[in-house]
Image (cartoon, rainbow, N blue to C red):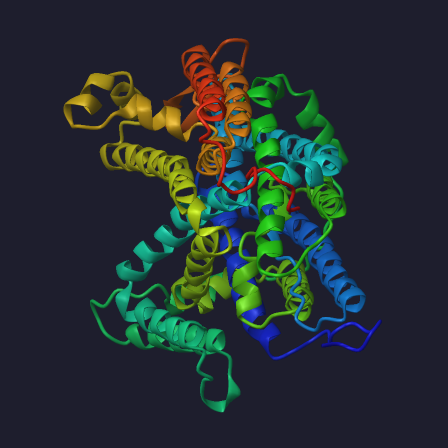
Length: 554
């Protein structure tokens, strides 16, 4: 326990482990930005190093320092010395959505209108800035409602949605990459599992995360000495990465932000993509706050979500297209023994990385494979928490809530496969031709329309079905009816289920009645639950169960 009125120490030994994990996690987002923006969108390296990454860093510094300060304040108020700051960073789902569902279509449309590749890339960046800014505004507007939503939503629903993202978009991907590069990645995985599952202290009092990164990096460079052995590093790549070192301070890009808002293509993506992703960020923030509270750290919802909005707006003003938010994984960092200092270290690290342009050099020196086991473990912990931090009777509800997120991951894999076919054949029209023949998927045993429907708005679908299931388990039929009516409204206007698959991913079809078939199905389910509630009361079967699962807990 900390002294009354005094916060816990700002830095403890566990902060180093937490820093390694969070820094590697954030660095992965930086590397994704570099790879996708340069390779898919055609952004020049000068734009990425001079505007995008410095602006992303500025937004991360705002959040990291705020949450470190907030953790110290909670520690002082409660007298506890085990308060872990909320992790903060770029949302992976939003990153992919903004690249493939906003900026890539804008780039292709601009090129189709006669713009050069360079001009089209700049237009895509400008529209991306506007999208990021609006995402921050939506989170600011959603901040006052956060506590009410948390108080009226079963914990099983909030945590199930989060665990679906963790297991599908984080853990599975890193597990696949681990076995793709076994000589480099398997030993770090063994180190992480030994350290964090058994709790044993590593030699020389060096944290397990540091051992994993160090051993993985050493193995990667040793492998370069053997011809024919796959390794993610090379001397040539390392030498080339240092050519882009310089001084890259964040500079406002107000003119480009205004140009993004005023561009004619902006409105085409406002309702189908930008608004839903902004709402998903609000939902994700609430889920991560719920995850933190389940792990023992309760934070006020409204100011936390407000600072997320401020961070995203700052990112857009200075040149980043990617919203920042409360990051997934608080229980994992808490399990590492991290407190507030790991957030401060993370902020300082990325200031140096962005100001000097070190992202490429770091990735060339320390391969992701050396440290991704830490992030894989975080995904495992988040998934496990959804089952252990909720009532045991709600475990089936948690399991059901995983399905839509897994469908979302399946759609991502499918679109990546179609992209690979394009590159392999040189026929970039082929994916569209394949998607125009749904019978081909049915003949191969894939129910593509159902996969797409389940994946569209998967975060909201996870929430609705897990909350409904938890309510039914508690025989709270009125609550189950309300959740089905919410699902009907979301489906009717196209926020869930309605849409179609394109070579770049699922495309929303938001509008009046766009999801009518699903809305009718939800409405019929609501009527059935209402009738069963009446029957349960009439037959005396509504007693002896737990209280209404939507009872406030936030």
